[in-house]
Amino acid sequence: QVQLVESGGGLVQAGGSLRLSCAASRSIFSNDVMGWYRQAPGKQREKVADITSGGSANYADSVKGRFTISRDNAKNTVYLQMNSLKTEETAVYYCNLDGVDYSDKYYDYWGQGTQVTVSS
Image (tube, rainbow, N blue to C red; front, side, top):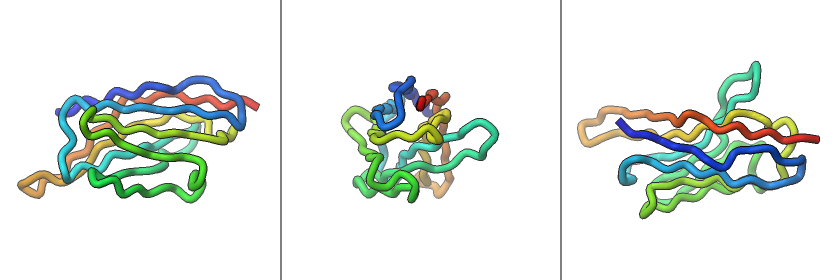
């Protein structure tokens, strides 16, 4: 079992910035993909960004150019720098770690979520 602990959420004005962190309870493996998702009230959870152990990142179209995902494998931590935040990006942000282990078994872990509130 892997524990993921998020931090960095809070209240920010529209146009502002926040940096989320997610620390994993074990070392990052080469097959791990770490990502950030968000879920706004009444909406489905959506992927914001993810990053492979080698540093290849993918972003949702809505956040490209404003959000940056990064990881520090030595600290078992992934970050999400969010700039130019919009009110509609108010949501609970969740950290995710998934991959396939040596026996081809899929694994998928979630953090408890951190609230991001963007005010107008």
